[in-house]
Length: 183
Image (cartoon, rainbow, N blue to C red):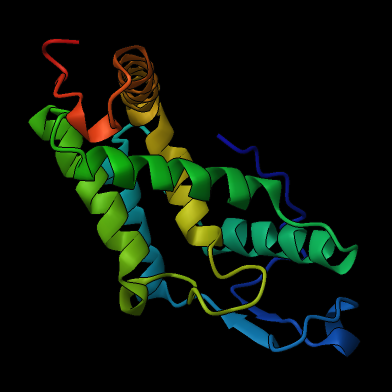
């Protein structure tokens, strides 16, 4: 989980992202508004994914957005976002794989996470915003990783096993009919 170290005296829930105010030039992004209702919905998903995880304040999200934008101003991509979105792709693959049986409670968490990622209308931060659009998605993925890490690691091992089996049998991957129980 990321550690947030903020100067709360400078944090606010409506951030003026204009270059003259923030010192960060971000084409196409002049402000970011984190509405209370959206923060509450976001924290509801956080609590469902990990009941022990404290909710996030708008100040914490705003501080994280500032860090992402500072890195973008230096020409750096957000590794935090890229890695979490890659893991979200693994969640999608595991959910779609008919040969991979997922426990009901875990499947529900995975579906909730993917549902949040796919429905921008309910998102805390709109996905289309440059640089920070996937930040809320990445934070949720990070929260979910405590519950999903073992499942995703096992799924990756299962996929490697199927690939090796297909190679050793000299057949297409789709011809390997091993499921989780047989694996």
